[in-house]
Length: 129
Image 1 (cartoon, rainbow, N blue to C red):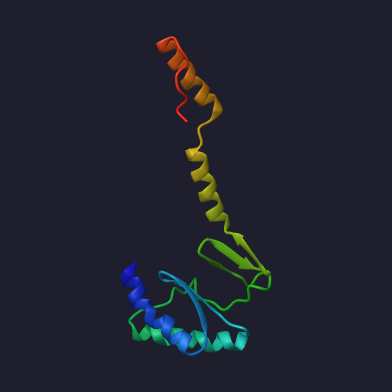
Image 2 (cartoon, one colour):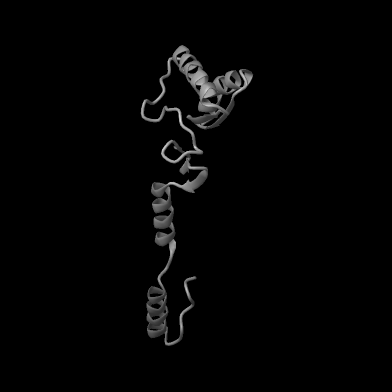
């Protein structure tokens, strides 16, 4: 992660120097612009910087959008920004929900565990928590 930060810090500095607001986590980034013309001017500058570094932008992830309009938003770090709203991306939501379910102990399983301990020792076993 530190190597990525050092490598792409130059992009952060260059875009900031030119007056753009760049938000980056590792190698994912968004450049926030006030107008479509500003965004259209920023894209070739990013493409030139990445090409000079021997890098390429992912064609499916590189686009101009307007997160205030429905249908023109973007996904970034597990969120969907669209129509003036930010919401957890469905894929991220399913992953979070699955992780929570995997950590939960069902009440019936807890009761069976306590009952099996009671039957083995003759007294109620401690609840595993």
